[in-house]
Each structure stands twice: as structure tokens, then as C-alpha cells.
Image (cartoon, rainbow over all chains, first blue to last red; front, side, top):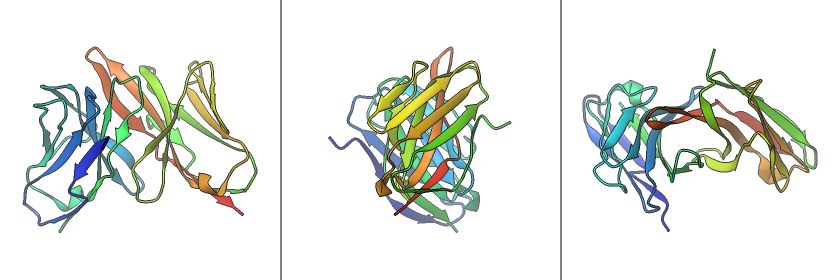
Length: 112
Length: 113
């Protein structure tokens, strides 16, 4: 099993560019979520989904969009990249919210 | 008040010692509790879930006190490989289901030979 796969692993963007961070899981998990990790801030929830077609905002949703058209995929879109979005992004999935989440290996994004 | 608070450390502990971490959470709607381990520049990995009855996994023991909104992790006979950042994590629920995880900033543990 691949678990949770995130692509790309590294990305450099210019301010104002848009891009999509990909996240896919092969464990048939209903719950998926995106987090960003910044030094001194810990991991913060961006968006989450409790199943295909259902998404909601987390703590820091501004500047990001998500959609969940399939159980397997939960892409995160940066609409117009800003230097403040320089961070490490983690995608995670869980069978239900009661169980621990499995994390992908992360995407390191730099916006210049 | 932060939702999940932890002492950032670092905790410098000799190999073989016992070390304990604590964490407090502020949201009484929190319903699931976890300890995660994160190595430098890696993704968080689930160490163990935490239950009110207390639970043990080898050298690791976790405890939840819902009345005090307090979570603990005890590591016995610490190994060099236990050096990492330990994240206290809670999952709260609203009417629609689980709302995603809320993380503490982590406690940095260094095991010294």
C-alpha cells in the first residue's frame, strides 16, 4: 500500500502564480485534511473533508481552495501565491475521525 | 488561551531514564486524543491514541484526564531513537462529524548517550 501520496515534494512559485498540491490515498479513508506547518506555529488545519463532495474550512483557509470529487483524491489549490504561504504542507487521511490520521510526506513550498 | 498547549522543551534526558510530557487542551468538545511523533523534516506519525482508562504500548503509557482537560505521555527506559518532537493532538466534533485535528506545538526530546 502506498498510503498517502503527496506531489510534488518541493516547489518554488513566484508571487501571484497558482498551483495545485496533489494528495491521494489508497486506504479507502473517508476523512482527509490539509495542514500547514510553520516554524514556531505547529501544524494548522487548512481545509478538511468527511467524504466525497463534502469539504469545510479549518483554521487558516484564506488563499486556498479544495474539492473532493472522489474518495481517493483531495487536491489543495493555491489561487494566487503569496510569500506568507511559504510553508510545509501535509495531507492526512483517516478511516473515521476517531482513529489516528496517516500523513503524507509533505510538500515544501517556497513563494518568492 | 491556545487550544492545545505543551512545554516546548527541549527535554535533555540520559538514555535509560523515564521522561514524562504533559499537555492541556481548552476545548471541551474535543473527543479523540493522540500523541504523534515527528522527526526532523518528516511527517508526523501516530504514536498512540489516548483513552481515559489509560493505555500502554510497550515502553509508552498515555493517560487522559477529561475533568482537568489534561493528557500525558510517559516513556520508560528511553532509547536514543526516541529523540524526536512529540505532538499532542486533539480531534473535536461538531454536528457534521470530526472537524480535523488540532495540534500542540510539540515537545522536543533529546536522549543523550
